[in-house]
Amino acid sequence: MTLLKRTNAYLPSFWDNFFSRDLMDWGTSNFSSTDTTLPAVNVKETDEAFEIEVAAPGMSKGDFRVNLENNTLTISSEKKEEKKKPAGFPTKRPEILEADVVRFRNNKENWVAFIGLIDNMPYEIFTGLSDDEDGILLPRSVTKGYIIKNWEDDETSRYDFQYINKRGYKTTIEGLSYKFNPVYWNYAKLISGVLRHGMPIHKVVELVTSLQLDNETINSWKAGVARALKKYIPNGTVAEDAHCGDCGSNEVVYQEGCLVCMSCGSSKCG
Image (cartoon, rainbow, N blue to C red; front, side, top):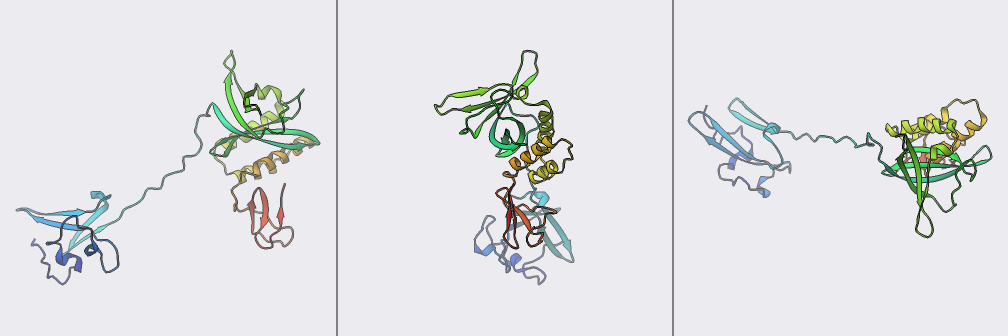
C-alpha cells in the first residue's frame, strides 16, 4: 500500500492540503463546499502501516468508519444522539407532596378533592365530604397545601393534610382515610394507582368518565373527579373520539380544562 498523493484526482479538495494544515485548525478553511465543518486530519506512515489522526471533539473512535477502495481512502462518521427517556414519577412515594385543593358538588353535597402533585402533575387524589362532622371542613381560602404520609404506632400508614393559615401557622388535619367514606376512598386509590403509573391525564379522565357504576351518587362523584383532573390536561391535547356538538368537527382539543372546537371555536366545560 502506498500513500495517496494530494494530486490524486479521486481525492476531494479537503485532502489537497491536509499535509500542511494544523491539526486543531477549526477556521474557515475547514469548511467543505456544502458549508459543513470538516475535521482536521493527519496521516502518519510507519514501517508496517499508516496511522490516521482526526481532530473531532465530542466524537469517539467508534463514531468513524474508514474504508480504502480503488486507492481512495474514505473517512465517514455518524454521531447518534441517545434519546433520554422521561424521568417519570418515582417508584416510591415521597413522604410529602404538594397538593391542590379542588371543591366540587356531588349529588347536591359539597365535596373536596386533595390532589397530590409531582412536578405540577397529579400523582394521587383523595376525595371526601366537605363537612365538619362527617368529613373535612376547610376555609374557602385554602387552595393549596401538603399531603403527608405518616405512620401509626402499629406501623400502618395514614395520610394527613397540612396547610398554612392566614396567620402563617401550620394547620394539620390528620387521618384523611379515616374521615372519608371507605367506598369513595377505595375508588380514589384505584385512580391514584393509574396516575402513579404515568397514564396521560386525558386518558385518566376518559377512564374515570367511562366507569359503569350503578349508584347515582357514585356516578355524580366520578363526574366531579373528572372535572377536577381536567384542569391538568396540557392545552392543545387532542380529545380523541370527541366531536363538536355545534358543527360536528372532530378537531377538538383541551384548553384550560375545557373542550374547544378548532373549526368553529365553540367550547364546552364541565
